[in-house]
Amino acid sequence: MDDGWTKLAGRSPASLATRAELVARWSEPHRRYHTLDHLAAVLAAADRLAGAADDPGAVRLALWFHDAVYDGRPGRDEERSAQLAQVRLPRCGVPPARVAEVARLVRLTAAHDRVAPGDANGEVLCDADLAVLGSPSREAYDDYAARVRQEYAHVADEPFRAGRAAVLGRLLAAPRLYRTPVAYELWEERARANLRAELRSLTAGTRP
Image (tube, rainbow, N blue to C red; front, side, top):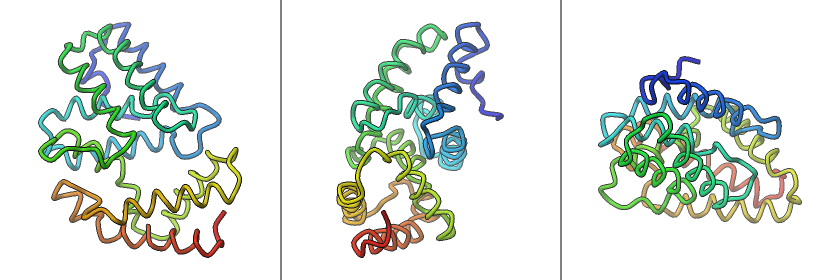
């Protein structure tokens, strides 16, 4: 895919090796939603929102790393992904301040509601990561939800339904899902409809 990596991290052997490592990680066979397709989608979404970021390059690098480690362990995965960025990016010649910002942003994805007001980079990052919630058709959203369920195949149906319903409830309780004006206009209304529909299915027991 035309991902713009070399514009962010250069063409050094270390940079090209890091890109190859990340592509391999995003291609791991146990992934069903957090795949290269997801990476391409969030990068495209970030491009649409780039004007709202203070450092669009840091946001893009953070998206490359935000699910680089994905074992289905919320919090731990994000921390390990941030640590991976802190190790790999300096070898690519990325300045220390940007490396620190990338790691901070990766850690934010563990809980999107932790973005502080005025954190422009964090707002763009989280809005891009949540863009899938605003999928324009019910079929596309249901496919996303089914892929997430597949990644948690090790969790029994009842605990998964309870946990997923709690996540959806927290999202719906937020005053707004998307913080940037462009994302809010593009996805807010549709995302809330999709979330409400999934929550109804979960509470009715019609979705595993």
